[in-house]
Length: 96
Image (cartoon, rainbow, N blue to C red; front, side, top):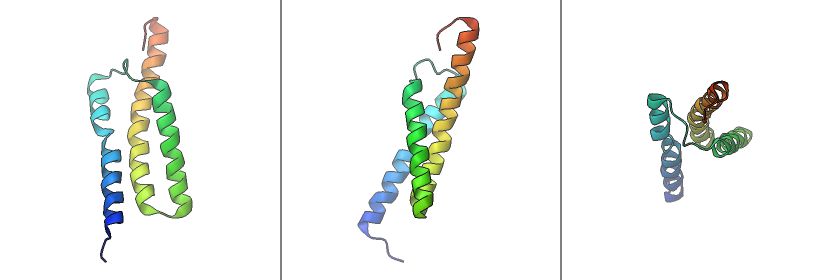
């Protein structure tokens, strides 16, 4: 099976956008700090990626499913840390 240049562009784009969240996940996991992260941005990102995932499933488009499935998981990790930090900050009276 020979790949055309459009498929290669799509694969490279999927790898870059999917892996772009890894540094933030690693930093958030290590530091347990989410103070500088925007809750609305990550909520919108998780929702948008989730919708792309659903779109890919309906279209039966495996590159879209795979890339957005991984991205959804990574952004959901960050959003979960942000939610936990916000809840903890409200309990202690500090900012998240």
